[in-house]
Length: 258
Image (cartoon, rainbow, N blue to C red; front, side):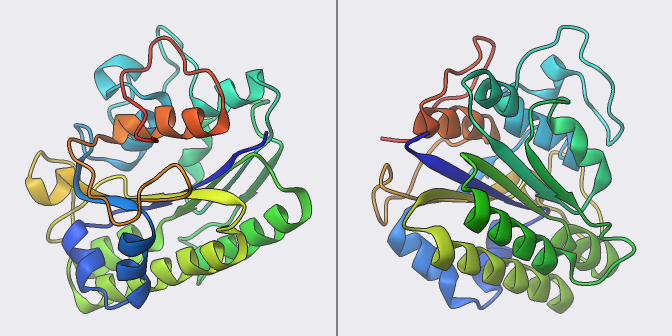
């Protein structure tokens, strides 16, 4: 495919957290691309339901995943990975939380890498290394890079907005910067969270849990533009639009690419 996309999901990253983490690349992303600090995720604000909605552009009431336990859809629909595969595209996925494997159906990925964030240290950085290495070797059309340490080691272990939480966001943004420096001239890079959090939990409809940041770096986006009325359901249609892939007819979100 002529136009390629990298989607980075930083689990549990709140907008105020990304602003307060102290990494200078946050302001650089706002300058380089379009962004929003008040996008909305889905209910329940839980990792697997949010990512199923991210890739299938429908709320949990439609895809049926309401917890972190996967169950097959009663009325199956294609997600972004399946639409890319149907168009002959090549996808890769690198992730640190094992249940996330179910956002793609068997046969829709050509490359994948998994590291257990509960058993190993610095998985976000090492997964970024794997993704960078694969992109350099194979140039997949679509790459999904998922970082879990902000949620697990930052939020759940130490509390949202704690110093340790902000440290995790800063490390995640540093990984995003590495990806941008390596491939920002060849790929559109989308950076998002799946949900926020408060205290040491998430899953409610509190603004701290429902509001997420997104950054869009690429030629289809106006530098410095603040996007409005953005939903996590918009990510799959946006990526599909950039890739030149047909959206599934059931998708409810809209493309944010100009």
